[in-house]
Image (cartoon, rainbow, N blue to C red):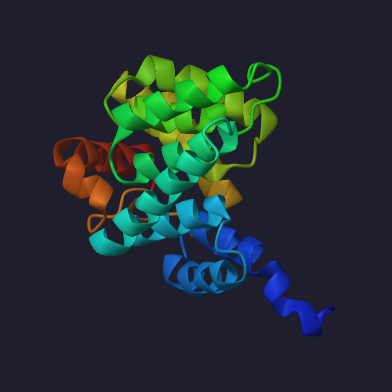
Length: 218
């Protein structure tokens, strides 16, 4: 953006995405909203924005973005990427069963989904973690980390799943790796208590928060 000051808005999507991944959601929202003024049909920006709203507890904002992504599916019903965007947002909203349905649809539409993972194993891992299916979650998250080993979110979710199975040493190793990759990473970033995800799954999220604390996150 400094090198291309006349076209700073061209990079707002990437900026918003980066802030989202860092858990800096109050900074992500204005960037993504400005990006959507220019590109209102960019469904992944709507998905990230909805996730940011959800993790901040803004129910109206989150569900408005979910409705927009669902309208994108109506326009492009054969696009696997739109279903991935919907699954990602549904996980953030605490709707893992619906997220798995969206992922199944995406994978059926993409005959090469097992050869070229385009977010499938990440969203599957989350959707298996949230309802307490840790063995399936671990398999999916390991596939994701084989492609993107520096994803500290995946390491944190793996820590939860290992704790759920009683594999405490493995959980602590994953938590330590998440902190190595992002020393600012916290339990509140992963599972904020104000989130719609927590509202939908309070007992599960409270247990996962305790798992991460025991594994070594603060």
